Image (cartoon, rainbow, N blue to C red):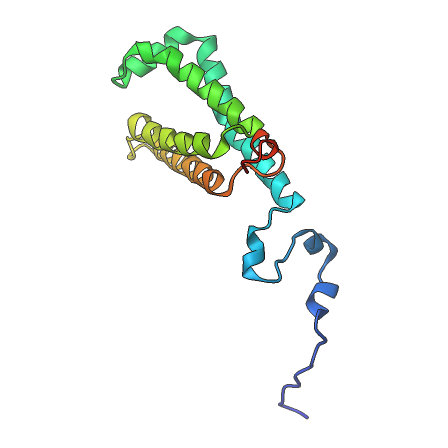
Length: 166
């Protein structure tokens, strides 16, 4: 049959049976409502997201401890009182540990999303400078990650889940 397409009927389940092995680790929900089911893979991904998101705040808080005078000078140059240094250090380290442990994750993630937005507008508002523009967008992306975490929760591997508050 030259010039005509031949349509083949494939049995149900064919696509799953013939997917490459690396695709088999990605769960496919049978129904849209199944997306809300928190599988072990989802919880591992949430744990990885929590670790990656909190690293920035932990390193930043510890970095401020290494040279508090320089950080106070930078804050003063941006119009912020130097007295905010120690509360900022405690906030960054404390919230990073809460996110890492999955403790009060939804609330802390929402607060960190707001903090990321505020710091973007205070410290990275010179968008004509390409470096500041990237830092501004980085903060927006981090805020987006925290908003997702606030909405989806910490997953099984968290203090919140152990306390029955996933």
